[in-house]
Image 1 (cartoon, rainbow, N blue to C red):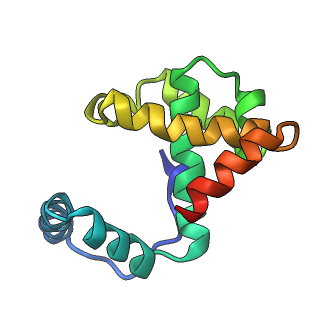
Image 2 (cartoon, rainbow, N blue to C red):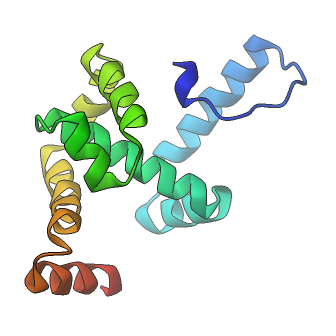
Length: 136
């Protein structure tokens, strides 16, 4: 679990206070519409954090589709050791609740974009689809 943690300030926050704040944040996020969620993510997270979360999510979905850690590493652009850590967590069931709460259609749409990345270097048609999605 600590593998996924970012650096957190050494200043201690009471666990009960943090849990209450975390609950409120989740409640707030759950009520956001697409437009608001876009602003929330783009303004709160750095570009590097957005890329990291996107890659992590892609890896998890790919594992659910039986991709190997090696294939995930190459496709998503993460190190093999990072992919193996994610895979170990996936196998241990760490992402089961996440995967269960996302509708199949949204998973398929996201994986479709990831598959376009896999074909990016070999298929002009995939490149065109990816560009259309990125601009659309």
